Image 1 (cartoon, one colour):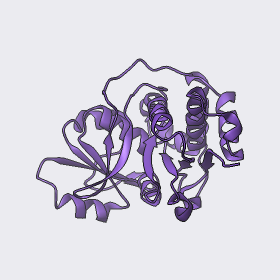
Image 2: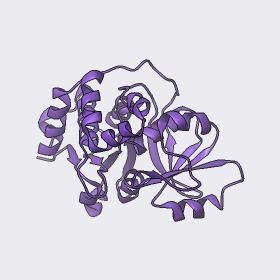
Image 3: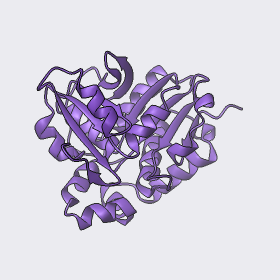
Length: 261
């Protein structure tokens, strides 16, 4: 029996050949890349161009019209010189009407590694309900691979939790729980143990990256990222004029009050 939903625990575990066999990939980097992507697109960014490093970001920027873009990125947790930090709350103040060229250590690399899939989306706690609804509507006959970006080869607790929330949303959309792989079931069970924004906050601040963000005074960013289902953006990877880019394909853009499931 075909497995309909599977969770990959690190970007290094992606099987690009298997993805190319008609799979649908959904990438998670809860702290911070995929949350920043959802926030930027919901705030009116024209698109997000995910790149693998600062050099690639600068090479893309050369071809973009002056003042039409913002360079955003970090490397191993440090904001790249000359770039804006990839923080969701901050990005919403600078990205309306702009193209965001985004370079992160893990999330944007995971997006590139997933590009062989038949369709690639990014999701977070902010927009998993919207992404799951779209995936169930348009890809119900496909195998869905939820990809946790991880952190420089390490497993990340927050990505696993985010994937579990996404699986929960899929089940709510009618996906048969018996079609979950063991990794998808494990993620879903973990989410259910800490469902709701108050319990989720425990997970986010217990995670290594969450502890680091708290130490640097970024609690407000984590609190924002924890707003389950607050955004309706559905970022989909497309081939654009300047390479791969993520565009919001949601039929309408609106912000709802945060809710937990």
